[in-house]
Image: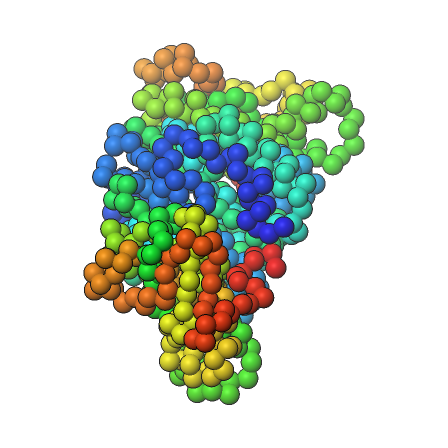
Length: 316
Length: 316
């Protein structure tokens, strides 16, 4: 079985005649329609086995996650997810593995309304590169650069789950399956916050997705906006699973503040729009944008927390 | 030096404020303008060291070629090349190698008017995945599926050079440097036929780029169009370098008919438009589309040539 047969067998259902697809997979390139009132939003991210996910991660989870991390970038722009290309590098033509991968990839693609429009499978160490394309109403995309002093800093969902799950992965299971599974699902099946991003299009002044860790990613917003930020550690949202599995408050805070892979959104919202924004979707205010450069995490006693590493370096 | 610094240092000049770029590299995603009278054309191709190019290929040539193979797909659709994303996986953070790679990549990007709008560098075996985006006048893109019985089959440039160069690569240099270098350049620095593709937009009935070999790629046109083709071996164009370096006519024919990596275009042109098409750009007619399925390569004596393999299988 060659490359073409493998693609035909496992990825055909991923490439339907969807919205805006004039010509899908099967020619030299796909042809796509971009409505005149929209702009194209494009992002690309790669996952490498053993680096961005544990080697023994289930194929379906790898498929889901390789798409999720890219759709999360579209969510951070407030874009609708539309089309993706996939470059899959595999050590061997393992039919069962590809079937699992495409199942997880397809599951999230269906949920997000995304169609596969191109790509290839090559032989090599397990690496997945996805380029995701979305559409956003003209001139209304969210950016990193719009934060203003006084804006609220808010996040979707809860923080630190994925990093805690990654740290526990492979350890003896001394906790209930249910809670452990809940935490692990956050690592393996992150849900890109597409609805939230879209819903906050005209409300947020800046946005980013939390892939490298809250402090690092909020730092990118502050750098791009020429601002700083003051956060209150006690306000960082924790899931019940994280509270149970990581009872030590300082260990938990470290996961929440510096753990990557949550794929929640961190947004800045002007004061007068906060109430409206919190009606659009569930958000937790965690601090304020400030004129003083740097991101500071305040403890209840007025001291500042500091951590050795603020985020994830892909070559660390 | 981390990933961000490496990208900033070597790829910044590749990401200018170009045509249609509302927001380039540096946010979660790029924002791009697609004019209302255009459609978006998207393709993705991956190169793996040791498989798609010899391990010791110069970094600049790898950079050039990883872009060229993708732009060649856009050329086959008759599209203007506009934007690319790049996923570069590197065994080590080799600054000199990345500098060379980006130089070759940038050289072709400049020549083709292409801007880098996203991507990442990860640690892993040397693999390069590019997604290329282009624009084509609405409803006028070239496809594989439009060939009609009686159409001429034509090719741009010459055939077999890249395959011959690949076969000789690493052998003792028993021929003049000049001719050898000429042939090798065709392997390492293929020039995507963007002008030709665009120029033939309303003249060709079908098109494909020759990446897997003439017979295999023309076979894709015939399958998509529900036709066959009859080619005359004596008409296949050979470069002077190929004629000198591969004097045996049968060996030469095998390179021309089945060798991949030429990145010339193979197009079908209705009889009444052939003369006009040949005024637009240099083309060699090599045969005709037929109602009888299959691609046949006729010898001067009326017999048919046949080859063990008609093309390149990426898992062979």
